[in-house]
Image 1 (cartoon, rainbow, N blue to C red):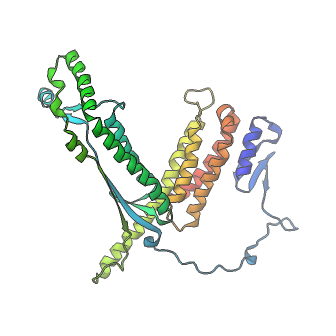
Image 2 (image 1 turned 180 degrees about the vertical axis):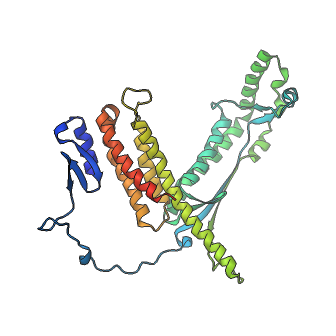
Image 3 (image 1 turned 60 degrees about the vertical axis):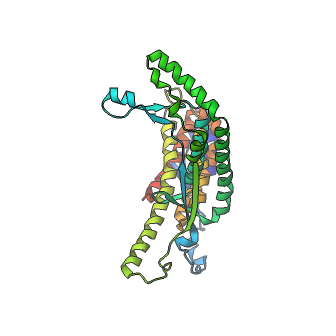
Length: 347
């Protein structure tokens, strides 16, 4: 499929109508309205059934969820740059009015919060959901995951140290900002030094707690539990696997739908500007889903591989996608094919 798609995109620039090709399936191409199959044929032109030549496969032991994944929870404590404005709340009379301290991104408070958000996002992007506040990590990628997570945590804590070192300067700058607003609006109480915590309290408001836990099994209990409770736990484990698969599929569907929506806009029309990140996102999501996938379903893995191959093929034709309408149409056929397969499996 990849070679067919790449060839079709390259030929699109030449616009040869007498031999126009389009993708129909992984092993079929339409040339001059005839379907040409790449399947091997016997001497009589009948596809050869090679199933009899394949020896029976040995029984495969399906791993339990406890062997494939580990649970992880990440909790962030962060200073909130909002302060209740009692005077404004009284005047408003319909709820609380909060003062936004350290507005904008060009300050150490927002930079520190951003570092903490990076830790949280990394965990969420590289795991699948288990329950609220707890996710599952593919055990095969545990070392890689922790190796990339640790520097992010260290950077977050360094940002706290930097913020605390320069806290007085940051407070003074924000008071000056609010003072100008207060003067312009005639509200002298807007800038108030008591709205800011001291440096020790500030430090105590930041923190990251990451915990790893084994996935439970019905044999983990030291005392006997009822068959009903065992069945309930097993159902939770089964649901977790289903939800993990659904998470993988939906994570792949979203960037494909965005790419389809964008490439469907004709070149020159409003919203037609092509950016490389549209295709880069397909490649990134495929690689990430390959790491977090814990399903034993070969069909799920094939769909991840299909997305990776599609992304790799479209990456080589970014310039065509930027400027050639026919190339976009060919790319849309490839995207549509992968999407249709994903929708077939969506749960």
